[in-house]
Image (cartoon, rainbow, N blue to C red; front, side):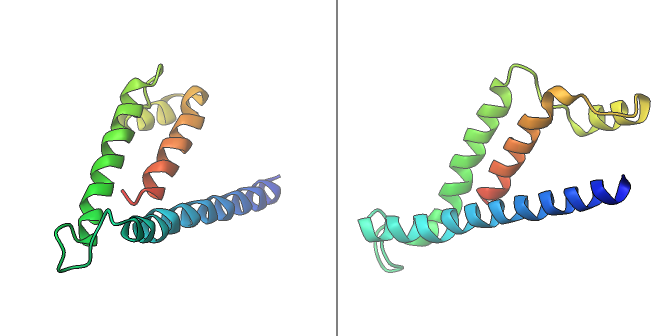
Amino acid sequence: WACIIGIFMGILTAKWGQVIEFCVDIMWKEVPKQLYEWGVFTDLDGAFPLPHYMWICPGIFGGVLSWITVSLPKPIPGQNEWIQSLHSRGVQDHDTFLTIILVSTAGMASGL
């Protein structure tokens, strides 16, 4: 069983990495290029140069992800709670598994 679980988790991790890389490419290549073409940003000598995207994007995504995390009906456990439950019971509460994966993926995909 250990080999089957290891193979499955390896494939799942590889696919998750591909999803994150795809999202990062969109957020840090395609979106800035499109905003530049639409005239939202200018070149380096203009009034609002494209490098401003590098602080605007993490600021917006950080705020949105913070709001989502606070708005969850069941809060995501912090590192101390996670370690305590893992070492006292041996398992992590399954209720927050999907939200942890989604928030983590969104955070990594946005470049945070």
